Image (cartoon, rainbow, N blue to C red):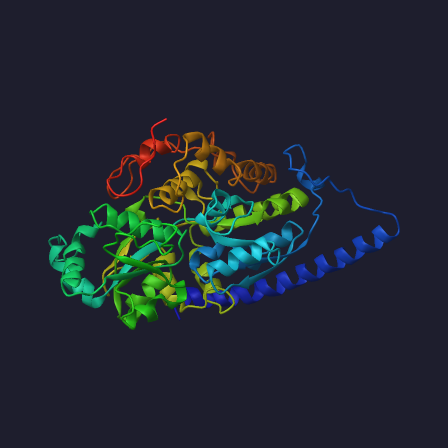
Length: 479
């Protein structure tokens, strides 16, 4: 084990003792509060409405201190682990249990059914639930967990066939970004041999599904359409995409069931570590500084427990800032490598979490923005980010009927809640835990950008124009 990680492990042991003392204090305070309540000495409690920024930090009365949150074993769940392990939740009067979940469907169902108070979730899940695709529910997100963090990996066999189409630099190393033009002849070869070209992604409304579709379609490769008769999204497909849970991706690739996949870390680096595949691109190259996961609660939860929702958001913002503070990533790697969190080898996690990313074995490159948790206003839930997902759902047929531009804006404003984020952030500024400049000056929409692999221009305020700019996929009626 590297010396830095060894020292961090020792520090964690000391920190854990301190945190255990904090937990005991929290429990005793809870017992005292119950005693006072029984004696008629109720503490001040605000009404269960939408939180307001007029409530001073010291007066926040936590309506539900004991909470259970879910996550999937991916490095981008890091804000939850850090908020718990470093005591940020407890600083807000929250006693949080974090439970690993088996798959994304289970995460969604357990939040909707109230078995979880909130969860690490795919950005597309609350959006799909509100837009009418899949299981419907009123879910909200006040916090975006990270930017970037995904990759597309192919098998060694496929990479060998792709490589002749990939431009090389003077040292004989591939020039990035690698577009899907390099895989197009391989897909044609498989088709001529009567073999379907199969690739994996983690869930129908995951960023991974939309990113691999975007990458393929930018090269004229059809990734398939969703219809009521084909819910797998494989109509007219040149590549058959199917769902595989993230931790199972490397084994499925090694077994030859799929020839490539799009997934978050550490499962691309695991393929390199095991020598079974090669990551060919990252989602940083597909869409620079794209949103990835979000933290989700039900609308009814934040209406019933508004102060609790603000407190949770405060703790997560602090965790995001800590993760992007220089020097903290090695300690984060040590925490995430624990079996109760990601449970992968610390060397594998460090490959992407500490500012590098390995493509072919030995081809490790500097990628300081591969995992971003706070910089570039990563924690703020921008409406425009959510609208991008809606455009892709419509593009590929998950939303089957034409929609007006107003529908896109109204739908996302019921799901993304930057108002809650702002209240939490302003309280952190007042406490000296955040800088005023950390709060973006925005109407909720990012500026238009063409930082995509195909250089398409995306303006969140013009979803119709964006959808209609693509050659492959559904088109909207011009209003």
